Length: 160
Image 1: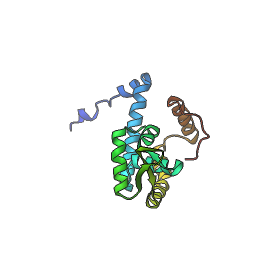
Image 2: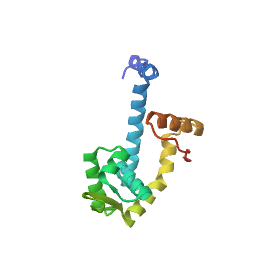
Image 3: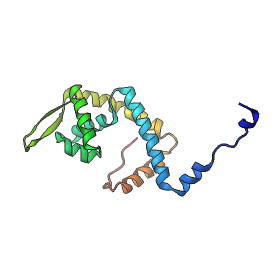
Image 4: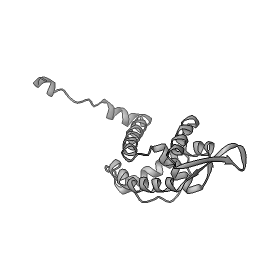
């Protein structure tokens, strides 16, 4: 590399674009967090979608794949593979839904509960590393703003 190339100014367009176009900034921030979450999940052997499914099943009990898909905002075709993988690993079981024989109820297993506990234990450190540039107050503000954007009923904030 030549000395002239070293003096070439660094690009400054994106910061200006992000300031002008909040949608672009949010998309890029979301993509960066998604990449970090995927990398973190890969290190711990449980995909992001799998983690979310186990977390929801633990919280609300057996659900249909359709309910999981709708609540977690995961495409239904992707949800099928997520549940297939969880079932193969022994983390969930699928049984005919007693309320609707046309669908399956997905239920977390004891093995799935243990795997979820391991994944949840690693979450606070991941969140701290991912959002380290934000103060606790800024994290609360971001949570509030995202809740509004996603039209989610307000709930008390949880500790990071």
